[in-house]
Image (cartoon, rainbow, N blue to C red; front, side):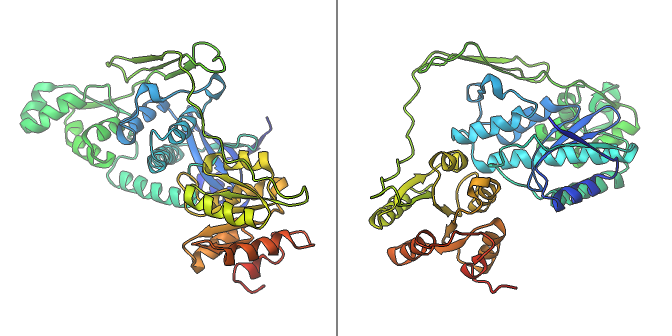
Length: 436
């Protein structure tokens, strides 16, 4: 692992540099006693981890965004238990259709906001130290977040927090009742009943906010009068126990025995689920490429989640005498493209989890695919879409519905040309732009 040390400065300066350099890897941020990690792909945020309450943050997200997820839904292979295991869990849950891509993105954005907030609060107290690791690059199939926008939104939350006089109060502290009788006299019966439940020293301010479905600042403002009268105090509490994500035995080819223990926050009973050996359900393999008439005929791939659209495209491509492979899982797009090594890629723009722009950007990062024609296929044939397609490295733009009069000219243009394709030559004209 190669780690480059970065001189200590402001978080905003670091993010600006990483965006400009289209950085991919991990940025570690060291505070006085706490470390956070931000994971990037081409200058965009993929995930954040670290802090004093990593596990509590995960439990909050389960409760707030993934309430339908059970212990039996969360399974990782032994090699996947990493410092960013929560992100891997999200990927697994989306792939198994236990949660939606929107739910996963909501968790990611919430984690980013909380981590950036804590970093800003620490930065107010003491200088931070930064280091980068370009080797630690995560799968960016769930979402890519603009770091500057995320920081700007979090900075607004931090400014509201400071304006309320809470600069030195961390939302990771837990409220605890010190004088119950005096509190009963000060608060209304309904408020007192709520405070008795939540201000027990076992939930942080953030935990309480999720529990009563209020934002953190509103919760803190409601507590301030009682804190000033010293009937409620704030105390530090440890992180919740780390979930155990493990496999009890190496899985045989057709069966797997897994044990997943997900302890709840302190004071509640942990859940342990053991799934019995079961025959793995047959997986639907991606359609095999249609054999081309000769070994010299190119192979065409179509990344598209719609079965009907794939069938239509296959008919058009096969009729033209080319090989064809359809890829309907956007998360598996890159591995399958590497496996089949197509000569041209049609890429649908709107797909669950990862859109065409994100996949196109990832394709262009692979050296073997830098000169492969990538054609964005979409029903949104507007100037904004064409600009984004061009920036993502697309070679051309094909509007839906696809038909022979649209597909065949593209195949002839890029596959029958004697000259090799270069994404920087001729693409401006293809996408509707005049060279500058």
